[in-house]
Image (cartoon, rainbow, N blue to C red; front, side):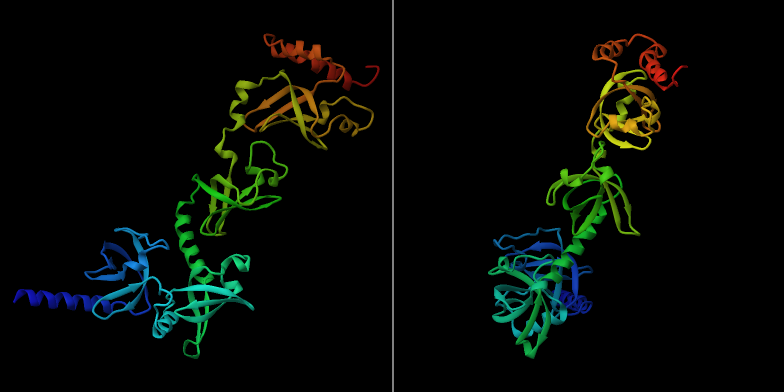
Length: 387
């Protein structure tokens, strides 16, 4: 007597479980078992839903999920328990199922037969449907590349008893993209190092695709420790890249990325590498109204202030002696580690190479003595005639 009561209780519970959901409703559950023909899905409570194993296979016929995975599916029946579906296979859907799919938003499979005026002719469940060009993908593509392909579509219009169908693949792709974006955003936090792909390059930097349509900006100032003049010389659309998340502004939907932060800051070695009075060779990177910037090594720029150049009679004539790309011998006058500034003076052109070499080798002398040679020449040059 106990067994029939238990069977009845189980069926009653399953019936109550099914009533919690409606046909066409999208629900999420965990796969608890996969049998030869159906898989069982835990959707909460004591009941379980079923789904055909065929719906869990990829194009090669391999099951693409495993026990413990969570999936989303649409309720297609509540009679005697829940029956779920992730798609309606092409050619296997009845007219009623297509109508249900339209009302519930359930995806259907279709084959792109050919390009027609304004879009594509798609074969769904043995009948013709129309997909506009704008609804075949999220990006503009060559129309011919979709012919003969089997895709999953959503029915957006169902007219004349199903004789007039309009379908969209783009809406499903956008849904997937939003779902992926939600997962991707969980990993995008300040300090995270993530892989991405260059989506576009602008004069101010590059936009990096991080997954699911989520993009971040790699500003030109964060590309390298050395000054970057043109981002397109470093990056091209489609390039794979690893970046560091610098800041996430959820209110504005902005993500700031960095590339140079993944390598050592050259300023970390300045104190051990450079000293006041040291003479070395650098390359002019920029010339401004107040002086010339000289790159000592990639990422380390020093400023040769206009006051350190010998007078030539006109206030701006000093510019004629320097230009971007020019190699110059300079002497370090000051180092400010906190502000990351180095002041230098250009070695006067009348100081020969032997003099420069001899000056650079005087490492054991005091800093005041090291200043003497070049600094005296500069001071002498700056004095008015006759004084």
